Image 1 (cartoon, rainbow, N blue to C red):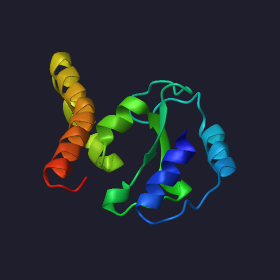
Image 2: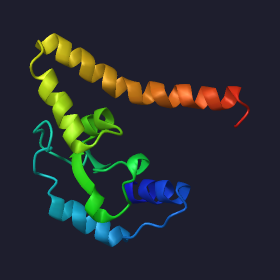
Image 3: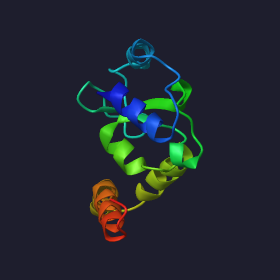
Length: 130
């Protein structure tokens, strides 16, 4: 559940969500599940959309609803902690590369999210933090 994940992330930062589940649903409906992803143009559906913090929390972004945008899950995974302008610059650069190279880098970026989380978890275990 998207709302629960947002609430859990806010709690980790010792914050409360400044919007209700109803307000979030309204934003999603008004944001348009049938509109295209801002970055790749793929039509957003209930199965492929993701809420992205435009300014990542780790870079000073807020949990406010106006810091959320709807993009596809694949782009949200690849964007990670980049600002929208940084991610768009990366996509613009990749667009100048051959299709095979684009696919390889995009795949590595998306896979890197899981790998980064696994490495972080192992590092914490090794340091005795877990």
